[in-house]
Each structure stands twice: as structure tokens, then as C-alpha cells.
Amino acid sequence: MIDRQELTELARELSLQLHVVEKDYVLGWLLAGISANEALAKHWVFKGGTCLKKCYFETYRFSEDLDFTITEEGQIDETFLLAAFREISAWIYEESGIEIPADQIRFKIVNIPGGKYAEGRVYYVGPLQQRRNLARIKFDLTSKEKLVLAPVEREVHHPYSDRPETGIHILSYCFEEVFAEKIRALAERERPRDLYDVVHLYRHDEIRPDRSVVMNTLREKCAFKNISVPNKDSLMRPDAREKLIAEWEDMLAHQLPVLPPFDQFWDELPQVFDWLNEVTEKPTYAAMQTREAIDDSWRPPTMVQAWHVAVPLESVRFAAANRLCVNLQYKNTWRLIEPYSLRRSSEGNLLLCAVRHEDGEVRTYRVDQIQGVEVSTTPFVPKYPVELTPAGSLYAPEIQRRSISTSRSFATQPKARSRTVISTGGGPTHVFRCSVCGKLFKRKSYDAKLNSHKNKQGYPCYGSFGTFVKTEY
Image (tube, rainbow, N blue to C red; front, side, top):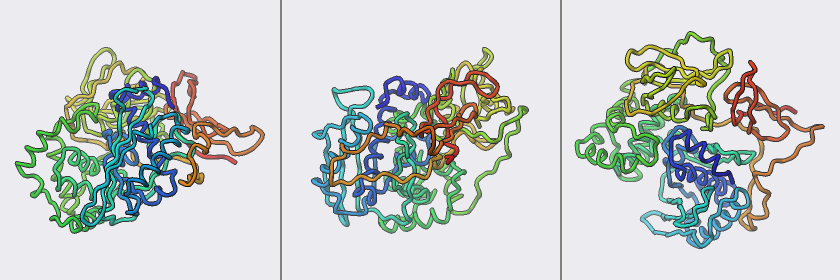
């Protein structure tokens, strides 16, 4: 299990409370346990807001629940679920040290027309060692859900030092199905997090979803639920707006470092539907030009990390994802900027590329010289591509995933945090690139954690994790 210091460093980067980051950490290990279980892995399809956070957008809102569509209805059974999760909890303890007391695992089964639904509660003791009033994670499981598109296997973002060597993989909704499901959910229940999700799904251009597939999937899902296909007129009603505003802070503020203004998302909703219905195209932007010579081979890591610099860079990435300006202290003065990208100069310096909000002028700021960062609630409309919010799969070697049979105790499995020792005389060598300075490191074990080192120019670099490049044989 990671220690409190690692949790604290990441919480500082994200400007979130410790218990929120601890829950994200435990969520990752629960997903690992489900994925490692042969009986569950084939029939549990991950969906919802936590799926977006853990499988698609690392600068996304933090979520609290795990939602699954179960394709084998017989598994929505209290006896089966309790037995499976007691084994999973034992395995997670052996792998990570996270405690999930067996007597604190609960599932309630409800028969619904056309299927079954289960609500689960799992309580845990994580790195914060909170043993009174145990923290919990909720499960929502249903067999009554129409899967229109084939599920995909996605790698789970788990930006912690005890990440299993082969990563964590989970069967999940594909991007177009998540998009359609979120629009359908917004129409049915009119909750703030669904509005927030829909707009974020629209903003992420790098995934390039097929909007015709999204719309066809939405139509099938609405037909299955026997509801009308939503459009901007049916959603953007005065009473719906009032309901969403009233619940905006209560339902979202605890999941975000800074709560964006409601109108920023409400006003963007018509653009989502105009794009989906092929009335308009998404805006295109010319690339930002800077005076500095840029190393075009470097990109910011997909996963969040503790950058070990004076300011929380992950908070800046959050601001960019949410189109929020940042108050930046630089050379002893504060200025309001629009964050767009992190680049690395040819000299090896990490640069924040931004636009000065007051006059629209492009500026670059050396990260090691930034003195302070505060995410504001002032929204901005992009003038250039927002590159601070990458999405997609992480680099990972092609290694066969471990599977675990439910017929025997998980406790007999080897610990994932134990690194395989490879003789220096032979075997594969794993190459990692420092995510800050770009320097390459070769390792006999698949260990991306980097110690402090000097960059190519001889200056200190405090990059904590490397990005996998290749394996040499």
C-alpha cells in the first residue's frame, strides 16, 4: 500500500482533500480485483462517470461509485456476490495492503421488470488508516441495460507507485456508447453531473468519436427505455435549468478542485446537439506559435502525477480541461492566464504555454520559475487547441494479463507490488522516458519510478515517474 506522503503529494497536485484521492486509489484496486477474477471479468462492463475518469480522461471529475452492466444475470445474486467479493477483498489485501473487512461487504438485490438490479456497499481501510466510520464505495449493478456496441478493454489510470506491472485492464463501454448513455441519462434524470459529463465528452477532440454512431446508439437506448430521443429544445427548458442550478454545487463541488460556473456548461449544450445532428462542425484552431524552440517529441503524460515542482501542475491541467483561467504568479506579479499546453524546450525546460486573458497575447512561462497557481472561476473560450488534457490508452508492454480463478483463495497469488528480479546478464530491458526532462532510463524490471537525476543539460530534475517507451530483447 502506498504511504500517506504519496497520497499527500498527489492531493496537493490536484488541490483535493486527502480522502477523495484515497478513494480514487482504492477504486483502482477494486477494478484490478474485478478484472483479475475470471468469472466477473468477462461479464462486468464498466460504465458511468468513474469509467470516464479511470479509463478515458485523467483530468476529469473524481467520482465515487462503480457502475457496471452485468451480461450474466445469474451473477446478480446475493450469495454469489458476497462470495466473489470476499475473495476479491482477500486478494486486494495481499496485493496492496488495503483492508476490506468481509463483514462490511453488502449487496441488496432488487427484481425489476426485465432484469435485476443490485446495490452494493464496500467499506475499506486505506493509506489514511481511518478505522472509525469506515469510508465506503458504492456499486450499482444492473442486467437490464441495452449494450448497443461491443465493449472494449481499456487500461485503468492508476497513477500510484504500486501500480501492477502489467497495468490494470477492465472491460468497459466504448466511447460512443458512454456518450450516448450520458445524453440519455441527462434527459431522464436531469442531474448536474450528467450535464458536466456530456459537455466534457464533446470537448475531447483527440478521441474523434463518430457522431452518427453516437446518435444511432442514443436512439436505440431511448427506444429500449421507451422515452423520446432528447434534443436541445426538450432539454433546455426553464424548469430543467432551475433544477440543475439548484443542485449544481451540492452534487459536484466535492468532486472537483474548483466548481466551474453552471452557465459555462449550460450554454455549451446547444453546440453539442448541433454537432451531433450534423448541423455544425466543431470549431478548429490554429496551433499556438511560441518564440522558444520546442522539442516536438515530448508530450505530457496521460496520467496525473506529482511533478515535484513548486506549483501544482495537475491543477493547471484541470483548469484547462474545464476551460477555466488560472491566476499565475510569475516574477513576483500575478496575472490571469488561459492555460493551453505544456511543452518542453530544446534546452530541456518545461514550459506552460498560455494566453494572457486581458489582451489575448501568447505567453510562455518556465515551470521552474512559476511562484504560485490558483484556479479561478473565470471561464475562457479557447483560441488555440487545448493540449493539456490528453486522453487514451497508456503505454504498456504486450504482456498477457493474469487471471484468477474464483475456485481458490486469492491469497495464494503473488503480490503485484513485488518486482520480478531479472538477471543483468540477459533478458529484456525496459526503456522509460522521464516525463519532465525527456531523459531515457533502462531498467531490467518494469519499474517506472525514477529517482532525482540530472537532465540532458546537467540541471536537477525531480521527475517521479517515467513513460514506457519500448522493451529491448
